[in-house]
Length: 354
Image (cartoon, rainbow, N blue to C red; front, side, top):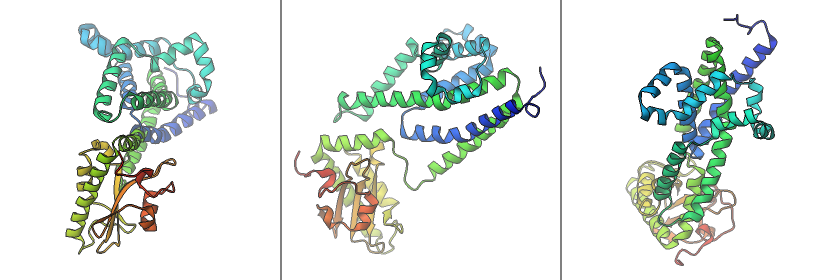
């Protein structure tokens, strides 16, 4: 084994610093992508491949003794075999990998490496199709059909591929290179940087006042509301009335109302539970409550924020009676909803029409 060149070679030192910085920053993008898009399958695939690579002969022995293990580990074993025969290239190549797509699509060997990360075997394709079928049944039916689902699948696959090529591939090849070349100390340092960064961003995400609601969950809220407006309005009205009753019981203490008017605690939890009579459980978390004034609230709004030019979806009660027009809402409520369109009705529609 050759001596370490970390302190004797500027190129080796610069390569290590680049990898270290990448491991410290990449988890931010990975965690946020996993929160906003369904990309956890790619994380599991790459993680399994790395585990099999590090296990080496032990993983191959298990696969030889079990046909089930052979099927389950087929892709990971192919990954291990490929990099056992052909070490990864320099890190800068993987750092700019998405920009080099004309090369790795036209070069046979580079294309083979690309397919190691984004290729599908018969088994993995079957698992993908089964998971998509379950997702369609769980998240889209009965109000939403294939016309909404298939574009969402296409966008999810594109985002997942970009995640793999831009973030997971540099991480995986770094682990492979350091492990195969016996640079174990460098591997430990970059892995520790990645773990610390992952823990920090995960803590930051989990400690948010409002949970992160995925991109397609918010889309489904708008699509489902448009598909069955009368049922949506009934669920929203039931939710806001339940929250109003909770606030009435607690109004002498001003409990649950934050300084900016956002409502937390029992009223919000109960409102979201009522919303699940129509919306899916993850969609219910796209809704929040706003009340005014903080002490002895007289007005309460249940809403889903405006996004990308889409007006908010909302219902409101003032002294127990429903408010129908945006002009009747105070500026604080509009700020909370991030009003993005000049509409007098929730989602620009007349609720009674179906």
